[in-house]
Image (cartoon, rainbow, N blue to C red):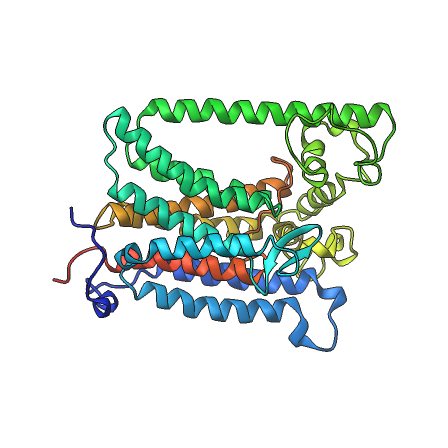
Length: 412
């Protein structure tokens, strides 16, 4: 199977099939984007000022416009081209992840140093990890134990380095979406089932340790009548820590694993208000801009337009509105799997599947945290949550999937 990158760089823009565009995903993305703009506007309705240029919904429109151009540009390029520059992309991503950690260069927001000028390097890291993983697996020979271990060693370095740098920001939400994507790509590469069983065992062990750690902390705070929001970090807690989590990260886990130990007016406030938002929407919702939780500020306005945008949709458009959003995401995800299955080569399959799994994790975790199924992580909802870097990375990634479809077979 020939997987080399094109040597004639102008040829990467030449379509290889007469039915060159798939319209299912772009139409679904358009629908999701319209939902996003409308409910970002609604979530911030009570604080809109006279200058609409500074309003989040208008900025989101600009981001989506830029993202649409990026989507088309990437779609027009043969995805095999990226093999020739993947190491440069990966190196550039590592450089930005290092630069953002340097005081005076990286911008600190809410205690985390995640911004380099106007973008988040963690978003470009997702793209770099996707491409370098696909490149390694395309050129790897997975058969014997020695070959498999060699490939896993390369992947451990390639994926572990950016994950570590992301965790140092700290940005747990961006780091946790990478392993499922990589494991899915390994799975279609037919790695031994023993590896996945071992990985599952390690994952369950880590989850168990985190749960025990959170429960110990919650019990200690409850017995000493400490406040989770005011008193954490004011005492010697070295004997309690089993995992190196920041206080705010542990505060997000504790309401999920120890709800009986917390003050509902404290660390569990956002999740409780989210549950009220979703539950009060009913079948048809309260109406656009009429949701009380967001409009009255019970669902904090600092998160209503990004992390908890689905809660706003559920309250104002009800079950039917939520089902529409889920249906649009379903189209994007199932179509991504279809494109992965129709790819012309292993590289196309890996790229399309990796992007689809990455989006599936974002969708599942974001919606699950708004309805109390998983701890609050701050993972945004693709094309709906507010955010420039995130919107652009989503558009670029889906552009790669479109490229896999467009160049899926030779021109007849």
